[in-house]
Length: 299
Ligand SMILES: [Zn+2]
Figure 1: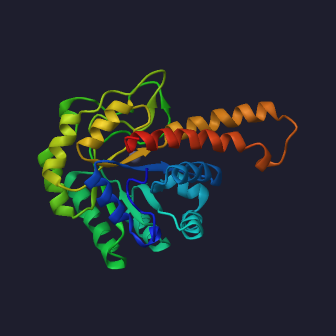
Figure 2 (figure 1 turned 45 degrees about the vertical axis):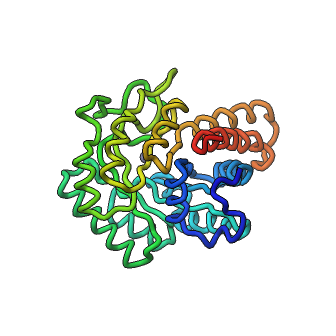
Figure 3 (figure 1 turned 180 degrees about the vertical axis):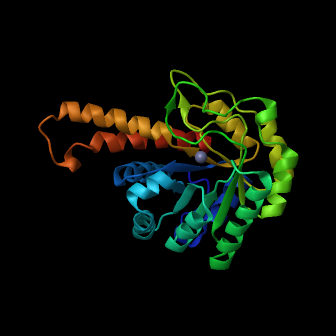
């Protein structure tokens, strides 16, 4: 228990510090997306139960729904009230303006995703994001993507369009090294056989652990595993052992939320007060997060 030893003054440590500790200890911090308060509660309850730091993510669509400033206010209110290491990340942000908006709103971390643009353009824009973040607050973490893994968090019939799981398609270590040097990002999300979303009726393709290791050896910054929904726990653990310090899960939470809500609505047909028909839904999210956090922390 309490692997990060943050019994006191939890909120005085920055996200950067927690990531460093996770890296040193060979565990990973869980990153879970929200677009509503109920999901946030489920995630927070699970993290609190295990006494682990946690990162809340909102990508562009989620931010549009919940509100950029509202997401900051919600997460900050939990951090302050419970003196708890809960942080907020602007997941997949496709424009420099979007990155700046989130930094200005008070996000702890941002992900600039220009992996679909030509390499030089990706470098130039990512650098601009890094410089902006540094000018505002040196503790803000900037992450970038290199290699395409699809772009939606849903249940898929086939691999996302444009994604191939072949050696050739994965992020190359020398490219990653160059990219990190040129941009100065704090963390990198490479394509290592992972996909956004998860495949219907089965487990996602295996991760290329050797590639994780090779990339980590040259970039020397923490790696982030996106799209871990659908990956086996052994694969995730091996990725963590070889350099992944943050793991993203979204689709599995969405699926758990939806299924539990459908059941609750069927059960409580006459109930109209939302707070009376979402208990099990929040619990369902909590239980997925708890299970994932145990995997990420080898508990
Ligand atoms: Zn992602």
